[in-house]
Length: 81
Image: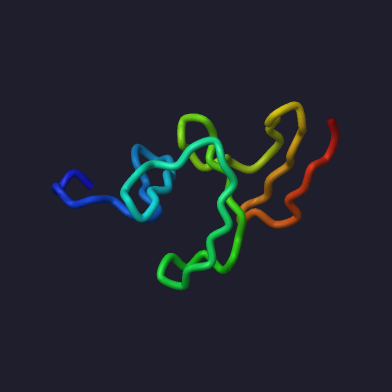
């Protein structure tokens, strides 16, 4: 990873997945819908938490709402306030 080239797409760093946009900027605190055959993502949604890590399966709270994630993110939805 530290070969001097800009990182784009998914990178696994110390066992955790991070996503870097086309400008090489790590994405954080956002939902991503990725449908790129080069990344083999099959049109799935992903949530990147505030530190940029891909949210793992299970419950998490964002902006006062609870979400439940299965990996790949299927059945994603706002559950309760």
